[in-house]
Image (cartoon, rainbow, N blue to C red; front, side, top):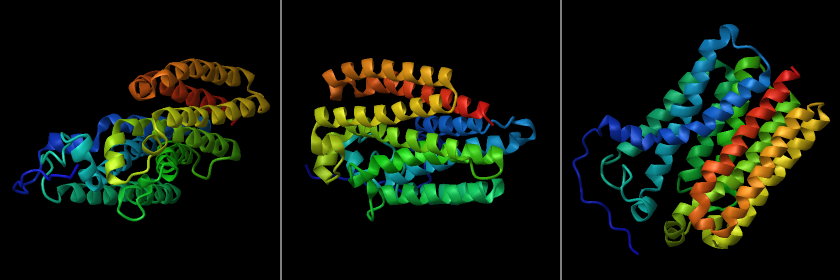
Length: 300
């Protein structure tokens, strides 16, 4: 199906509500949650670090994540015209080049806020923003790969924001146990991001985006996503027990068992049940993240 652009519209400034819709507040939760996990895993009480904590929370959610959504929607406006034509840019509610302008402004503001927090936070933010542009821009367009696309988003949403939260509290690089957890949960998030691609199968196939659901089909992609989500959590359980945290390990393990039950339902109808799994299995996954963070934080 050929892409038919919306009718031309005078490129006036968009309305605030349409800008907010472009930034997708509902997507801010995962990175803000991972940031909170980083704070908890540091084991450092907030004390007088409240300003840095709040600034980091805003950085993880509205700024960096919101900017990444604007970047993605700008470069995906042709795909969205097929999959979701009511989105702000293909519908014309964000007219002209305003989508790109908002993405560029968000990038600059995010870097400025990160610089005010700490140099290492600025470095992590810069890396996250570079990956956000590389994910969506025509080159290298990492999202076109079913391997690198979910890996990039999983790493940015879970790993970098967890790292930022821990760094804000510690004032230095996190210890190896924290790094091990954030890397494992970033890896598992690859499966979550693969499930998120189920809603765009038709558009991906028509526009050459080789997401796993588009290339492998929903059934095989769902089985792979489940495996990728489960194995890192199993490794987290082993690590927690090995670090002398059997209760935390048991709680994460119980969450994994619940997810395995949810996965059976998902695999019976991957395409229809993917949104349902996001409200059940993914919720259990992120709760396990917080449990693991509390465990490591208690060792500080």
